[in-house]
Image 1 (cartoon, rainbow, N blue to C red):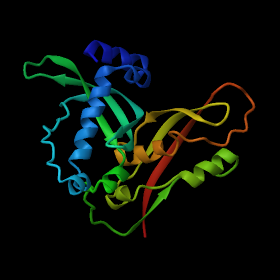
Image 2: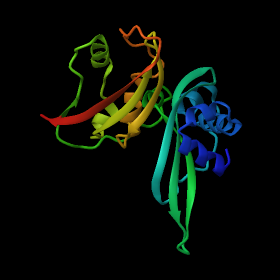
Image 3: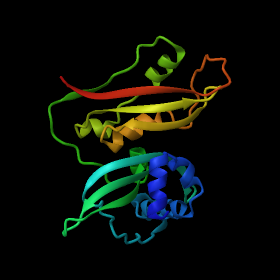
Image 4: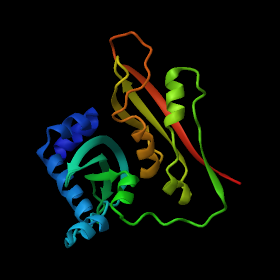
Length: 228
């Protein structure tokens, strides 16, 4: 997508709808996931394939002014993946003092795929023994009970000492099918954000409402490490 299109998408909050019909987005996802899979140790062991040499993309320097995220299902080499397509608007100041808006796109890949493809994991930091805890809703309704059973703390985040909270807006259809998940507040960690979003994307939740209209709920999940 052109910069002016990316600007319009961010302002309108239509990233999910736009990337479905964007040839650029489809090609970007295809290329990045092809590299992710074919560079994995598991794939190379199985096929004796030479890894693709990828020029790393460095995030532009500057201030993140606005961002949007969208979950995407894709398939590479016969394997299904759930990824998060990210778009950021960054205010960058050049050496001559002039500022410009840079639109930065990247994919966030759930950590369990790193395990499956034997990619290196984030290094664990040495810290006092901790127990990962999560702020769970008190089970007052079937939906609260369902959420309390689904919530989990990503172990790689716990090992790395990562804490935070994520707030999401979730649209639920009349039959309980999750229609859309949007971040209102990121935890600052891909690991925590992906775990929170993964609870809901593609799921069906208990829904006692008899209305034929979709309803929106706001959910905040707090991830905390408590020293033993």
